[in-house]
Length: 265
Image 1 (cartoon, rainbow, N blue to C red):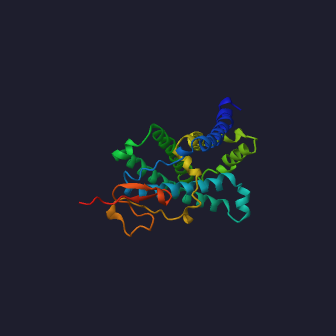
Image 2: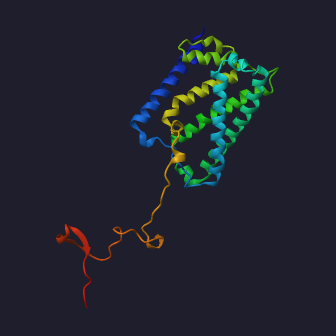
Image 3: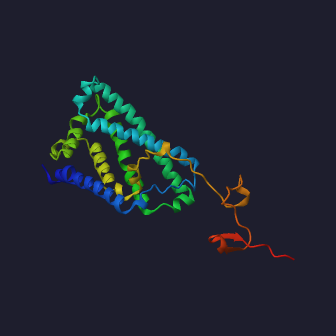
């Protein structure tokens, strides 16, 4: 086993996962106010309303497909009656559509961020690096799918015999780097790009993905108030009436505030 194989498929993945876990804990512990998406909806909304759902729903579907394909052994899916040909069709069609949706949404978000002056001014160097590292594994994944699963020979490349057991071997601390030696280059680049993204994840706005708004459906309504007189819809409750004119402290009534009488002409 070469030194490069050990570096790419044992050392680098563990470094990446360590940075992901430790960095996320550090952000949660020391940078709670920075744990945000830094929303730019105020600058431009129409393109955001189209691009954001496309990207988020697409990337969630892609993630679910990866969990099924990489973490669930082939024997389990065959045991429930899903043959290899059926899985290949489901993964190629479903994953392809989800990947295209994620790419289209990401392109719209990047174009919006570049063409809208206000959004571009609010874009930090960290955001620019994040967009590059986010797009890289998505694009490489689509390239690998097209080369080997769509236009490849036979039923395509069965990554569940190599990449999947290698990934599971990392989690049980028995890495089998030799499984990745003969994996097609496009899949290798996709995996490396994914772990590179995981390494920088906690230090970008992507950390908001770990904040699931479980209480959002039951949250109380947000009530907006204005101090302008023409925005008052109803008379304020007693005790909250605005005091007009100079005021003085009434000692005889326990320190209550009462308005001073108007001067007589």
